[in-house]
Image 1 (cartoon, rainbow, N blue to C red):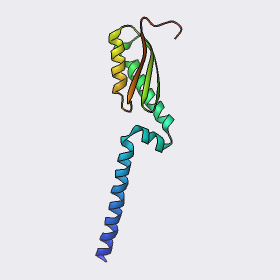
Image 2 (cartoon, rainbow, N blue to C red):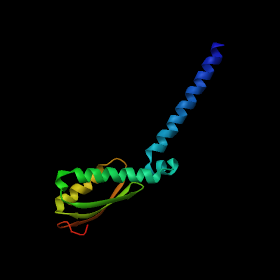
Image 3 (tube, rainbow, N blue to C red):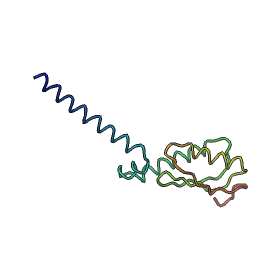
Image 4 (cartoon, one colour):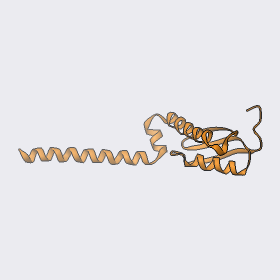
Length: 116
C-alpha cells in the first residue's frame, strides 16, 4: 500500500516538474510567449506603456516630445529631444525595460515642435 502511494506521489511530482520546465522554456523567449499566450498585443502594449512611463518620468528628458510604438519586443521611439545626451539617455532607458529586445531610433535633435 505504501509503495503504491509513493509511486503515485513520484508520478505526480515528475509530471509537475516537467510542466514547470516547459513553462520556463516558454517564458524564456518573448516571441514564443507572445505566440503561445494569445495575448501578444496585450504584451506589446504593456512593454510600450512601460517604456513610455520610464521616458516621461525621467528628469533628463523633461520637455521632450517622445512617442513609443512596439511589437514583439522591438520598440521604436520617435519625436524630438533637445540634445545628443538626451537622445542617448532615451535609448538607454528604453533598452533597460524588461521585455525590450531592440530599440529603434526615430528621434530628432532640436526643440519640441508645436504640432506634436
